Length: 28
Image 1 (tube, rainbow, N blue to C red):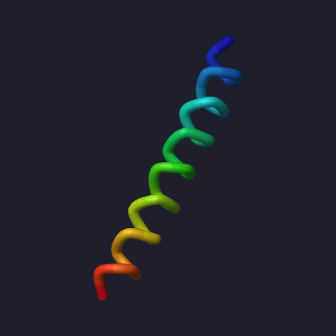
Image 2: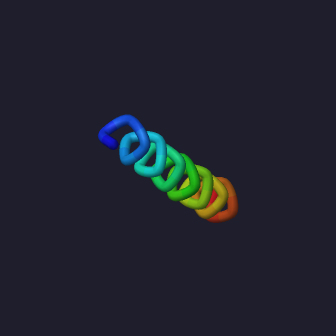
C-alpha cells in the first residue's frame, strides 16, 4: 500500500540523513 511505501521511504531517507550528518560532523 501507499502508506507502507511511504514508511519505507521515510526510513531510508532517515538513514541517509543520519549518514550524511555523521560525514558532515566528521569533516568539520
